[in-house]
Amino acid sequence: MKKLFKFSFVFCLFLFLMCCTSKTTVQKNDTDIVGKTWKLTEINGQPIKLKNPKNNPYFSLNTNDMRYSGNAGCNGIGGTFEIKPDIMRIKFNQGMSTMMACDDLETEQLFTKALLAADNYSLNGNTLTLNKAKMAPLAKFILQK
Image 1 (tube, helix red, strand yellow):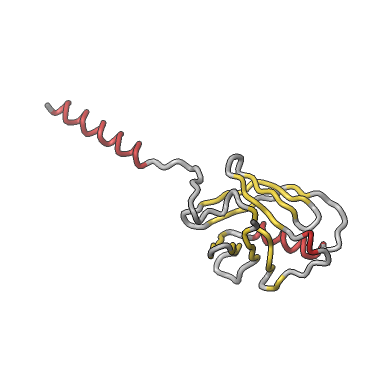
Image 2 (cartoon, one colour):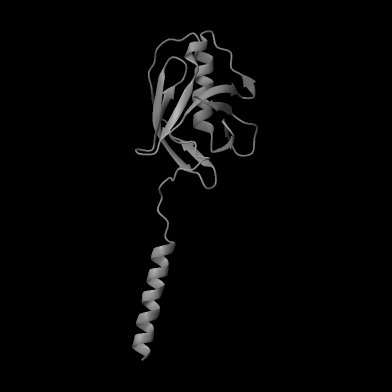
């Protein structure tokens, strides 16, 4: 009888642990920032000023391969990222960038710096804010439609 009880206990414990183990996949919901394109509107609390408004910086996140991609103004950017949507944490890893000369190079450099410095985000409707710790927002984006 004791062996049956032990076996039942171990089996139930095993089932419980299997059910409680979570997978590290990103699940989409209405507040997800992945699979959408985010257009830069502010950097370091200031509205962006572009010499060529057609070259507005943007990025998007792809969870299939955990990569971000976009355009920093005139140069393409991309790399890998990590995200924990349940606690609104994000980390952009150093990636690649093309290296063309640009009119809006300062905005481009600030945009790239903000991505790499961000460690968390907030979402308010169609506005995404990238932040570092509890400091003022690094960059603000709107959902591109």
